[in-house]
Length: 287
Ligand SMILES: [Zn+2]
Image (cartoon, rainbow, N blue to C red):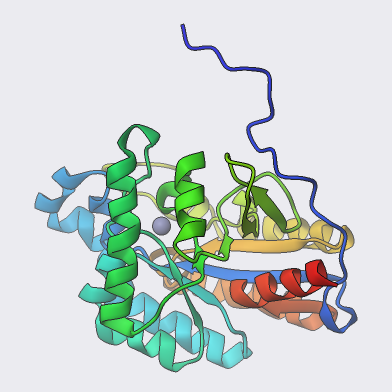
């Protein structure tokens, strides 16, 4: 039987207490995962023969990315787009528009394969291919990483740090950024933890191969506002995990707009990209 020594899985020291810029009381990190079709084929290649199933992801290239860019332009918010390398190559024009609009591009694997510790070589190859594809398609070398299918393991975290990844935005164990401690005791990337209540997939995606309940505007907006307000009161960072194939759909686009307007109306929230939050963290750390 597998046993585990009674040691905390995450040995990173507690998140330090540091102020947000410009007297802001909390931060909002608007992160999109531009999975496209990879969300459907990366871990389930059998879906490659199911055009209708994969077409959920096709929304990104045909509609979602452009609509999300329109929204961000309207509310004057800069976001981070974590893009699997495959998506950047397959939807190059749409992804170029993300770069042209001044948003940050983050690493999100190549084919959205979930990193598995038992297959470290494959996990490393997925990282390398992701970097190569983002460079080839967009001329970008990302500093941020969000784990495809939200998984990671110690050796991979070290590999990411050695590959120039400055921050990760995948873990669910804090409401403020902290710095990872690698398995060999070196300092690791900064973590900007996600709040899983802000993963739109949980509320707005259902499909024949993965049926689940979906939730309407009132349920999600009240959850998001309540969760944001409580995080704001604690001085934390509200980190969103959005997908154009979910929040780029008509009703959810309006829901996201209503949420962003609520945050903007506060006037004391620092809305920043992952790279900006990581840079601020480093500056506070150095001071
Ligand atoms: Zn994803």
